[in-house]
Length: 119
Image 1: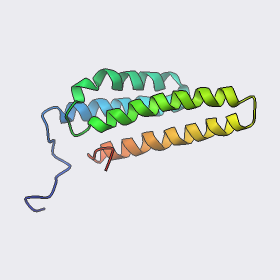
Image 2: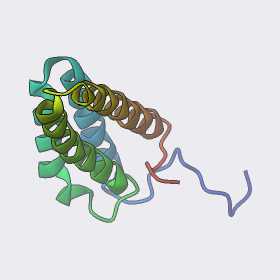
Image 3: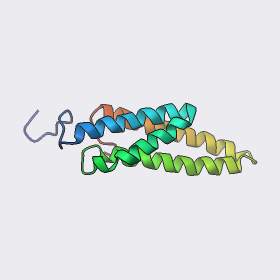
Image 4: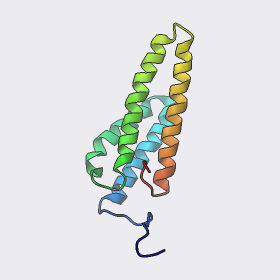
């Protein structure tokens, strides 16, 4: 590794390790919430509470991912439930679940690799 290549294994800011730990906890809650529902809310609240502590850290965008996944998931689920009277609602619910799984698993994989969520 040369002097100017980024080293993703070293914290860049003093709060990076704490930010990573709390975002990982939120991702775990969100993963559990895919099957139980209650932990989905717990993971989102955890990320919302700890978001300010992660401000200006390497992992700040993971908090944005968790929170936006939660809110968009809620909106799309409500839309799917409303449209469940028609067949399309079940497709919306299935799409929402698959989309949520992708966002949470991708975020978990990236944070465990010491990478930001966005490239």
